[in-house]
Image: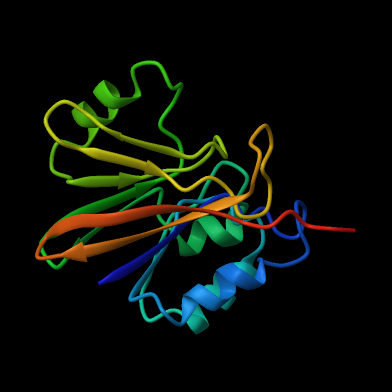
Length: 168
């Protein structure tokens, strides 16, 4: 099962549209995960229409329309893998401990907010993934997203994808 992970799309404030490379991945993914800060409902509508399965949450920059359609925390069983999605996890120091305490029933937690890619494992085995942002690199060298594979209840082949820099 192929997962496509993204967060912090911030459309249309940070970009006018999602990058073509990311859009091309939608048809390949079995599950699309968005960890919040969509900003516009058009992006949610787009991903809902093009995804086989969409798991998403709202973020701190999402207004009432998105909050009415998306939870703060989402959970899903993906072939035996217990996945959770949340926008904010707090400061980097102590993140693994805090998340392991807050989500003891998960195998993987996808989060966003910082726009900084993250891939660590907490004591006890919780895998923490932040795909960064495909539209707003902030202090990072590239805009990013992630893909991963779920195989027999295990997360494998986690890949961070760097997007080409926008011109113009």
